[in-house]
Length: 519
Ligand code: F6P
Image (cartoon, protein in one colour):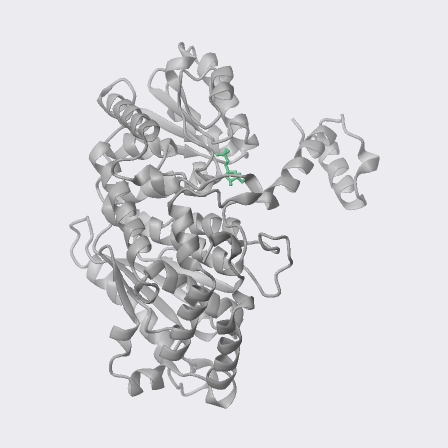
């Protein structure tokens, strides 16, 4: 099937077949029950477990039966997922609303295109020189969205796994100056390297933080802005105009939320070194190979995306909870929020037609076991089931006895309790059970495993967007608010026309101006 002719999920025969299968087996009195499903099928765990590139996924505690799984796989095939996957991996211009190819997987090829290979070599040589340069004690990555979330997550994860050994790494993203203001007093101009991470080199937050950092640098007596400010950007001329001494460039086919493999990941290479960065790429590439080669029933990204679609469009679940049981993955929910909701939070398909079904639900979560003491009450006894994704690493990098065993026991016990439930001696002690969860098990939180995990999530989002017929690679929905912000900043400065504002915004602007909060 030609990837450009592909039908949307609700237009293929398997969609109607899934509707009737759901009505017959998943609603009303005959509703599917996980406990019964396990009792009736001794092979259920094996049947619904998949392994890919060293990562194990146990999907067996989900509200799905073999017939639904087969129909969903048929749906993916009828939607031309193989052709769309191949087009994406081959660098076709599948991001049509922006007229771009999608190239992030090329940045993790063992032998990429000559330009990419040269940039990667330059960037890694630079990272090693910073690591070796005893004078640089602190590196500050200034970026937001994909120019922050991916690198920040990976650096935190590698630090928690004992893999980070370079200078101190800091991340500044927010327009709120408190973030930068809190950090600056801990830095010295001569000992600090600022990485200006912005694909466009025009994002308001990053430009404001970069300008403030440069002003601080010179005010503190710093000399040689060009040496201490380096850009990671597809916009080399804007970076040069700012005064950055070097710019590690990349092509516009690298979407922000898919960019940590490109020079946007320089902070990772500085924190953990060349072998770790290469292992991260190798892990992601291993998942790319799995995605390219595994048949749809064995393809982990495809089966996870199909489960997402099954829950969103048939069960009607409006959110998914991600609970990583590893301190190093504490920012995984935030990273996934951008990846999944910026990619697939869309209301029209690639042909501009309104969707007749819901697209991305809400991705949310928090690191375990902390999350057990926050919102797991709702997961166990709230009125609506929320599918939970437990992300576990088999081994820990620390040597503290007892912790890892207890941590894993807590995670598994939550998944088991959600499924089994319990009849209590009072209504408030009843646990309904039959609540779905998935376990993703990594061997460890090494750079390679992390690369595999993040590439899995990228492909899952791509597949889900492709099934829904939306473009997972654009994000027009962020533009309108940016435009209003410019107008409102002028109003707060007293330069804009207040009478053009709606009554509510005008009243708030007047109140803020009266309070003198507009400096
Ligand atoms: O505003 C959304 C967004 O465009 C994201 O898609 C992107 O990751 C982020 O802003 C940062 O963009 P840039 O890297 O161009 O500064």
